[in-house]
Length: 120
Image 1 (cartoon, rainbow, N blue to C red):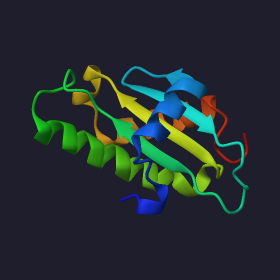
Image 2 (image 1 turned 45 degrees about the vertical axis):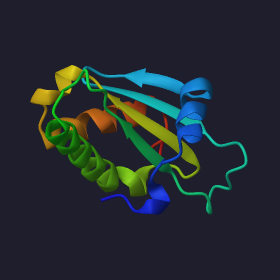
Image 3 (image 1 turned 120 degrees about the vertical axis):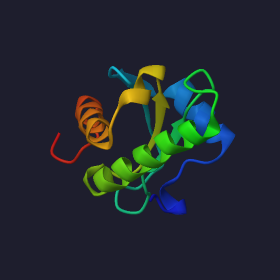
């Protein structure tokens, strides 16, 4: 589970990532990343937000399950992500059939493409 320190929660923060960030896509997820300009590398945490539309599923139970799986996958990858990033994950309707391992694999691929993992 992601701690409150690592969550993107304010509407204005989401809007900033959508407007100023850059995007990377996979089959089931869309990643938007915004590097905060005044973030000090060692001090500023990476914040992650997840956006799931009702177009993905009308049932809140299904959307919440997808969010829990993505938060768990992100918390596993969080130590490898460079600090000072704001990240929004947008879930597509094809993600309903994905397992936790598939989410983890796609997130690694997207983070590598966006060059926000350490060592890239």
